[in-house]
Length: 338
Image (cartoon, rainbow, N blue to C red; front, side, top):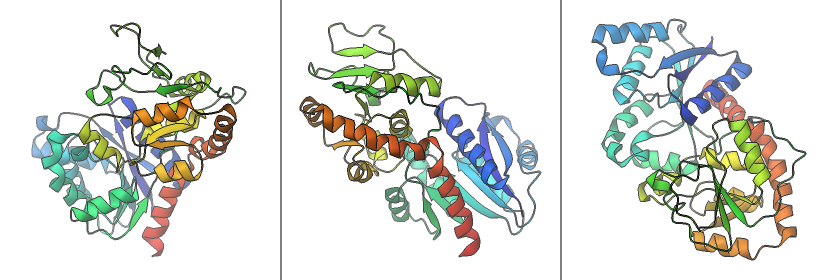
């Protein structure tokens, strides 16, 4: 029996970075064979060309193997359905689906595609889901798979300069594309007592607002260390209503970036791991930005330093890839043992 894992190529950004990370950890754990999946316009394929493409991807798979599928492939639900249909021709193959994102829940325009994704999910032997809340939501949508492993948090394996200690500053660091509507709060920042530090260029932003610009940083190691040096807090926030609902279900990479960088975090109190943040004293879980600003305004340095120490201990899990290691190991064990 061999274990295989899909990995996406020809796509940039965090989608590819995190699939590559999971693949690297799976390869270390299980000597996994990689099944490369390229982002491409599926509509250009005839049925015969598509079957040929699928057979090329699955060439190393044999009967009774385990295949870990990272979802989504970003090629669309029809590609994913065709891929699963082709994979099912291999007798005895056991299928684990590692859900990174559920695209119909990310974009309101895609919500009608959810039934197609549910068909894919129900064709699996086991699911790795980002949160218990996601598992409960999918169950409400008709999920029948009984074997489920909860991921909880993303890992963020970066190299941190630990000789730099995050400093007590009344600032909130926000790493994200501030031109996107869901992050519109950034350009509307109107708090004088707490500064917002953004990974953006000054550009056409209005002057006079209490904002500091770090510039757009693509390298994850550099980004984490720049944010660590900035000090203060890492802010996980969004204004778009549909995305806010999705944040209640998913595991957010920005949360793990801030923790890996060693910063206490500020998160909505509705996200899945808000309880962990509070229980382990890794930051603040708040109802609104007003509440967050008020709490930061009144915070004392000793309180902040205690949170920094707590985060530094917890960050070893995220930098070391332990959440992914545990999810993959639990999944294979659960699949084969129970």
